[in-house]
Length: 383
Image (cartoon, rainbow, N blue to C red):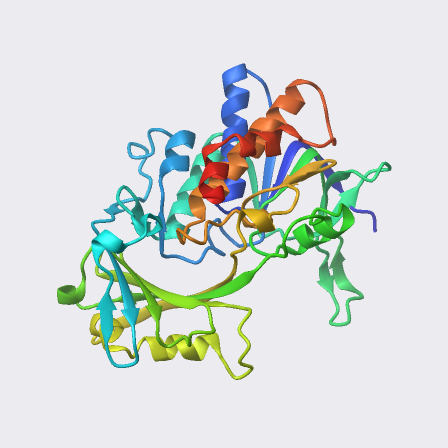
């Protein structure tokens, strides 16, 4: 069976902060120039935000650049950070770091504690209102190339396969989505991003990426233990001195608390279980005091690309670009990535729009990495 195909100016793979930031920026630029631009975004989840792990502190700088009137438009950023605490844990006690000695990367004045799934869902609504074609429940299964080897789009996975991968009686082939430029915003270690890195040697001359795992839970706590706007970061126990890791507690609205634990995946103890360490972490008196009498509502985990600027691959290749965590834009020192992911998508969108106006297609968007190097984002990651 032949696959059907659809044509777009720009195709975006992934409906997270990076992909949505790119999609919205493309439509804004087209509207400002009075141009008709077809932008398609595909998301594997059943809805935008379905694969976002909630509970984060975000720097609203990129959002303000993208949508200056986000407050008036009802963006779900309602809990401003009111207090920062950095606490070192031992097995039996804790020591709070004096505010005067707290590194500035832990300063969150002007930032917001958000349920990131809700924020991304809101961004999806803004993208659709701007005219972006959003296709939900479609996972990109393979990369498509033209005769010259440039990326020309992706194909979605076949439906109705047997267990062994052969076509079943209700088999439907995937659809081909073609575009002049394709942006990959799959998140950390995206499977297509890894293929692109290998095919186009995008990791030549850069450090290997380093990874962590972040395990996160959302709790409803007793009202007397809830302090909206409080941000707590912890170091020390239960990690030993040879293992990178730490915890966090973010107090949202409505008696909700997001807490989590991050473990670097270069740990050497083969018996260490990040999940078990997180369970131990919750028993520490400094942590347990918030949870006693509360109720866990949700939980999840995700990989984290923590290598920073020196581990970033080349961002562009013929026909497309890597954006967001597909390219490792996380600022691990600040424990933040949403603003960086959005900004990377916006910079890539500006480069793609410039190329489309010049009637180019499927070449390298070299102005994207150049714009990144000249941006505040590069300065922040370099620091």
